[in-house]
Length: 340
Image (tube, rainbow, N blue to C red; front, side, top):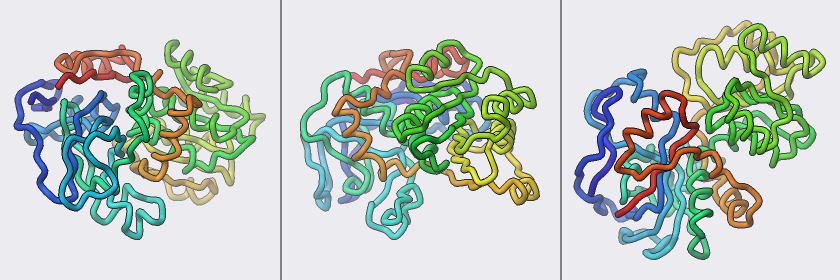
């Protein structure tokens, strides 16, 4: 088959690789219905993470099971499944506590920007639908695999509750999913920091009530003005830069919560600011498996449509164009259609 390989910064190729095989009895092989490019894929693409050797790309996926190892019990060939970008056994103490992304056997999914993919620990990672989803549902279910699950975790980690005032820092795909999550969890007011008209429009569609188009001290002042000097009850940090963390900390009220899901790059925090600020903080790689059954059912019931975040669709053979478009901020998130 052909698959997406990152050779060096700005050097993505769709080239031949051996078909994935069952390597362990707990593996499954999927024929993917669709895949996509994640904002976190842009870090190595831009050279902000080392690329020491050619690496298969892609960790968001859904599709049909075509083969399983001898020990797999919960999914079988012919079923449509969605999996988390974090592989987990769903049985270890950390999984039982709801933190599947810290599974003692865990690893990160890779190689999913391809027609077929191997999924380790299939029983603990994959969740099957009762029936084959429609094409529109496939797109929404793909979003559940990471970007929606991550935005949802940000909202949970920030402690979003019914009636809350929420601030979302970051208008990328995860931030937009954070808006959707906050709305679903009952937030009364949702502010998002955004300077891009297309992203603002989708944020409003997902439930945002206020757009903050400024940054730095001016942006902080605007948030405080909109919240009568109090700050947000819950802040979703969805970027991972020094500036975005500073915005989150300054805009969160004392006793409020910050859910941080942007992969940190070059971020340092002032312990005295944390101490006297009295804000709760929780984040990290999203334990998407915890939320999969609920989020998949919301999609299948037609309650949410996270797939609207895909604003550019390409055949997977043109994956390099997709990376370039997201790098240039010409696309929020690129959907890759797969042909086996």
